[in-house]
Amino acid sequence: MLKGIPKILSPELLKILCEMGHSDRLVIADGNFPAESMGKNAKVIRCDGHGVPEILEAILKVMPLDSYEEKAAGLMEVMHGDNVETPIWEVYKKIISKYDNRGEKALGYMERFAFYEEAKKAYVVIATSEKALYANIMLQKGVITD
Image: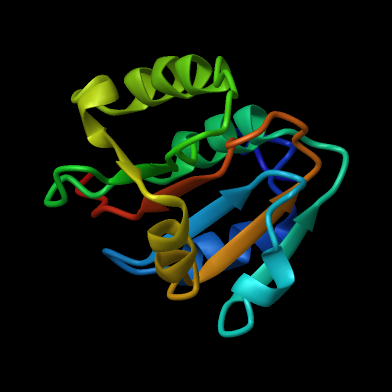
């Protein structure tokens, strides 16, 4: 056991977060996201039984967002014609604001298929059991300066 590390971060996930370098990306995927097919060229970590918000919070406690990237966190836009509410995005904005001085300005939006293409380039895809729709979020790792 380690002090100060969120318990939700498994040894395997901590190892991968440590391996990631500046500008590497990770996807925290909801339960509907095709994690295995999108993550063919990435590492895929299962976090079954957990939702995206608690994983996001734990990761941002130990990993900074990229300060050189204007939109270091990205969400998948709702598809035109889908009548879906996304209240989970407000939760993400609050979490990001706790750990990044830019607050929600660090958050951008990507069209669904553009998100998929960027996800294929991610270092890791974290598969959760999140039930909220359009709950996928992509993070770009920053530099630790302390």
